[in-house]
Image (tube, rainbow, N blue to C red; front, side, top):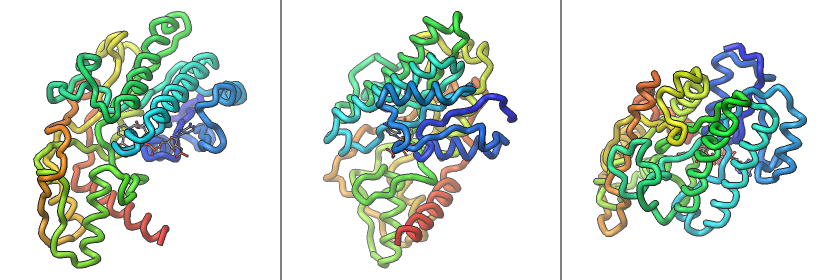
Length: 328
Ligand SMILES: NC(=O)c1ccc[n+]([C@@H]2O[C@H](COP(=O)([O-])OP(=O)(O)OC[C@H]3O[C@@H](n4cnc5c(N)ncnc54)[C@H](OP(=O)(O)O)[C@@H]3O)[C@@H](O)[C@H]2O)c1
């Protein structure tokens, strides 16, 4: 890949943005063709600052919009105003100012929480806007749906006249280097890595996991997510158009396979080397019984995940150990 244009990765310090930068570099994109700004350098919720950034950085041909205010159930429930305001503002600023600066290609990253809480499983793209959302993260999900519709609306109004093609991908649960291992505020997989690691270190006889252990979830290694993002970004316009519709244009990204939380816990324990007992606390809430992406559209577009879950967990555990050593 020897692009003549520059590529702006918004959110490059995040888990996904960081993986996209790694993949672009690995594919031969020179460092000086990848434009990045930290949150401190450029607050994407600030319209004037985003406008000035694009005005001062000519030659950007592609934008990966991987910046977002992201958090777990607790943060979403406690700070709903911040989740909807910051995400709406930053994505509207980036999409509009990218358009105003003549950027032809943009990839918006959403989330599987855009789908109704009772969506048929596996969740296909056309489940969007067919039912009520999960209330705990509704403001965040509404912002993400607005992000898809922003891209589609700019394409519909300006696609032909200005040659723009703004696309969206909806990732399933991600994990890998750069994940958040915070004891109270992390997603299930990094939380299990920490729990089993600490249990092994303490020679604890038992680890108790929340809920019945029966809900099924899907997990994608973040480098696979980055690879899928680049694949979708670089698809020829006729191919993308043939597999999407102007008002149903987003693409699910996942493995298409899920496993129960109990099975996941067993796998993490094996990778970490924890040999004690694993039990379930069924008095704790379970969440939805199943959340699996239908990835037919992405497969038809020629991409599928390549990192097996066990290998990905081993890589994530290495990252956890490095992170723990660095912060010790
Ligand atoms: N992680 C997952 O499991 C998952 C699953 C589905 C979808 N996604 C989506 O993937 C995207 C990236 O997620 P991630 O996990 O990589 O999140 P992340 O690790 O939290 O990274 C998000 C990045 O965005 C930056 N950012 C936030 N607000 C900003 C602002 N106003 N101005 C400039 N930068 C700002 C953050 O910088 P600061 O930290 O300095 O604020 C951070 O570097 C998001 O759209 C998310 O919805 C993630």
